[in-house]
Image (cartoon, rainbow, N blue to C red; front, side, top):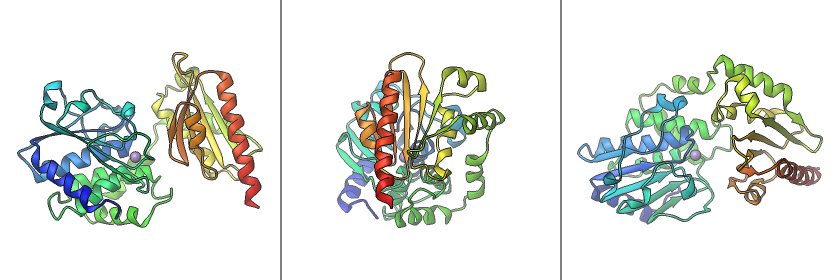
Length: 324
Ligand SMILES: [Mn+2]
């Protein structure tokens, strides 16, 4: 259990106090962003049927199975409580007007890079935002009791952010999962959603397996050009499915995808991952940030892409030298 009593007291009293509550999450949402956002919405709506609880942000097609966003206008924010889940910095918040409510709350599990909000429930030790929402329900003394619908959403968020409990789950992760699995939900159906692949995605994975470069320093890299995305009919978001292929390859400790952008500013979006040395300082040096083992950055030129490769090779070589 991570959240302090004081944070919970403030959170519950503000939820009680406001008749309109608007929940945002980050742009380019993943299942944890949507799961924590809509999971919290369902929990509050269930406990307070007379309040207006709204979900803000753009919908993305691949996650419509989790639920829909609401249409919002500036007027909705008047005297509203605004809650942001799963979003480390304000630039990444999806949807306008989030700062025009009466109060702003951040609930997040990323490293704190931007302290925003009147209340911050920010715990990098949590493996997902959905885990924190589950804890909030669990410790609400029945003010926000768990429901089946919320459980499905939150379970999907936890499964996604932990890579199906593979990436460093903690006792708190399983504590939350235990609560959710105890509800009447079909966990098999939820996990199947993550394993199903479209044919074009399977073909794109074939491209990735063929073209990932495995460098002797223990770094794997893949360049995904606009042309490749067009050839395989794959959206930029969907290129994510090949990111972690090198994680199972012996001798590889860090890996990176460079995704070509439409304009030159930046030229490449950079996804960095590691199972060895921390890579977030490299991301920070190149216009990004994130977790020690999972970060994002930008490269404005081919030269900057090469610089990032050089830096990755250096820290990975050093890491390998210290292994023995
Ligand atoms: Mn998350």
